[in-house]
Amino acid sequence: MLTPLAYGLAVVLSLFVAFIGARFLLVPQAAAAGYGIPAKPDGDPAYLTVKGLKDLTFGLLGLALIAFTTADAVAWFMLVVALVPLGDTFIVLRNGGTKAVAFGIHFATALVVLLNAALLFAL
Image (cartoon, rainbow, N blue to C red; front, side):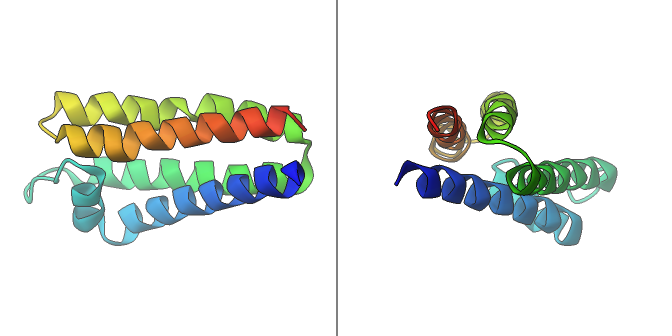
């Protein structure tokens, strides 16, 4: 029972991160607004592209680990990758985003990723 739940959550999280990355590459202004800090219209689009590439890579790496390694390897990946939404929480707060977005999206995501790591370690 625990194995499908742990791996299912890992797949969903990885697909979601890959989707976010693709969104930043395809519609960067809308993706930035959804992140919690709208991009300036005259800002440097390179930073949004970097974020998109990073997120897409993390999502695809998560899927590759799920497909080709052990639960422990995926758990360690999730544990480390939880630093990203945790950092995003502070980035949103430091740059004028709302507490609702910082905690309701980014911090909550970090907690779900940490929960997933714990489930994978329990296998």
